[in-house]
Length: 295
Ligand SMILES: [Zn+2]
Image: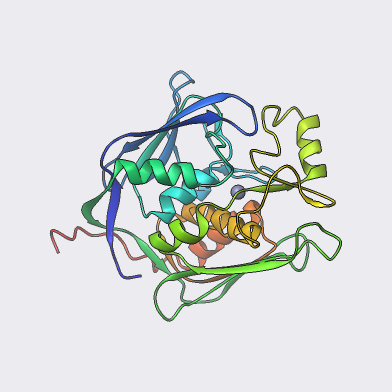
């Protein structure tokens, strides 16, 4: 990917629905923002809440999701919204929401992508910061085979490969997917892939008071015999969704990344750790955005 212009949306866009975690009715508004603003979330249901930048430094530890916080105000499960914005290369956007999490929709980024495309994307004439991986960066999770490995890419693009393996006994078959992250590939191959849970994970969330308005028809829940009350959109939908999550989490870098990212059984915490390590390892080599008009 060559240096490119920053983008925002032409006008506001709305997505409304039920939050997967809390079951709250949520109205989310995407608002245009100026060059250099970046992506930030604003809770309009909280008095005097500050905007929370979608950057890795604002993430807080959470199981199986990405959450950001500032001054005690939290936004849960930002990853599918971030993936939609990053996948379409919308760099500047204020995301307003009147509750603690975005609408879950169908568990994918599809509704956000449609809403953003409907609003239209505009060029801001200022170049986007870019971080090109120049050395290998590897992070490892609690288990030895949970890794994210980044290495330089010859073509200057961001490539993500995900390998998913829950073992031979799992109803989720082991699968891989690989994509060059461009807006068209994101729209065609990734945006529709839905989030998934194992049945016992869904029960555990319920017992913690989460997901009371979410049913197996709203996302993919795998029981012993396979998907419950639902059907896969493609055989490797789970691996594609993991790439969707990676795209959202890598956006926490706050700049374009180029390189080949090979993720194996990674989750949100490890993806965020990868972003931290990449930024540390390349602190001197981020290509700063400069005004293309002035150049
Ligand atoms: Zn996800």
